[in-house]
Image 1 (cartoon, one colour):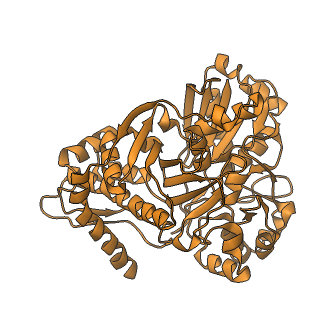
Image 2 (image 1 turned 180 degrees about the vertical axis):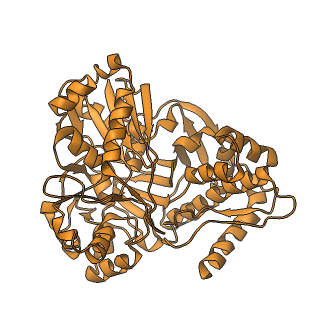
Image 3 (image 1 turned 90 degrees about the vertical axis):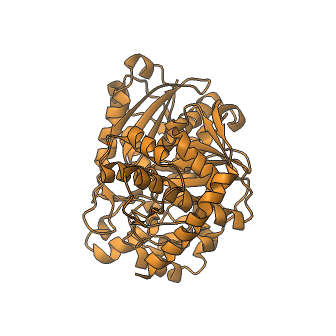
Length: 480
């Protein structure tokens, strides 16, 4: 058995996977996000550790005792700042925090070759600009920083006592030379840091340390190995077999991501496409990233006052796609691809006397699909051909939404058994590779297909005018 732990934004998920890759148990413990000021998004690092313990201990002790390795996945980019005692100095600044927009411009001015080094446009979500913000706005705290860790790597520190990270997650800091797969002294120096502030780098399937004795005893395990793991999207890709050049997935979690595996480094930063290391040696991946996906559904549930997701999707399906004038722009936390705009905010437009809960629900689902269409467009502009997307994340449960997405994106969607498990599945498979010596081809096999959704050309034609209005509405909204 192998344990995968995903440090997400809305919760920590722990799954146990058998040698054949089948999920045999899972448990999730929720997390809250603090938004103390506009553009801010923070979490207390110790909340991640507490939620991790709750999630793991919520699994059958008999299964826990059979675990032979642990992999970690997690939300990317979060700036977790530790002092000399390895305790957090302040709440972690998260991936969807937009406060450091000005610092992005400063960083690119300090290192003119930054896009070539990192493969990415500097964006507020990344870690490095957050440190420039701390340096300017919390100057008394900055000299106290001894180590900067990503969220899952803080949990690793609690588990093993080791300061380590993987290539995929570290790609999202803007401190990594992504082609060379090593820290960039130029990028670190621009933020007043050195390699001494950074964790040791590992590939996703390499062992970084052993579970501390006291944690092992509490969890009913032995002092088993912990592997590098990966950022949530890379780990999610490994979990569903997106490991070969051209393989692709659509992740419908809190954020939404289209991720394509590549066998070389293919950056396109000018269009806000991300180019990161994969969590597998010798592989990279491209991504279009949308800061709100399933989080828009959660917002919609609250906004129209329904009992839960099932009722929300049912209302949307009853209303029908492309049947009303309502238009939803899903920018609850700003947007990355292709706009790199932390200031834009969501909007619900085109309401009339006939607008009801169902038509609002339908508009929300359409709006998220339209945002992903913008991301797909810039991936295709970069020469990436995508014929099929494997779907993971909580949003994967709705077949109706899948039909809208497939039609708007003009791509086949492959739904996999257990695909909603997401990054934790890939983290467990990386642990399996480390312990058994299995290759990516052997360990990272796609789960069985549960269904395939083909694009509906007639539906795409009906939605096309709304997609055009959606793009015009962004431009108009941005101007005000």
